Image (cartoon, rainbow, N blue to C red; front, side, top):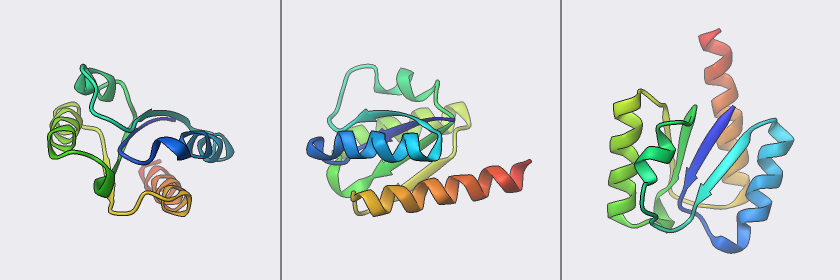
Length: 99
């Protein structure tokens, strides 16, 4: 599953990716606002937002793009590895229920 992460801390990028691999997901990380963010999100299977470490502009752009493409959004206030792990577990529950 391809997941886009918006927010988080730069120093945790490699840990986020390691956790994604452990769960069998492909993770694309945008820890700072980037041009074309909406286009990158539209190709994802899910969007994870760490709301405490992202600008309002980037958050709004990400949510708008995800809603437009019908992509599920998972928002969390904290941005730690444990939070991402909980998110992946939640995504697996949603996937299991959809099958």
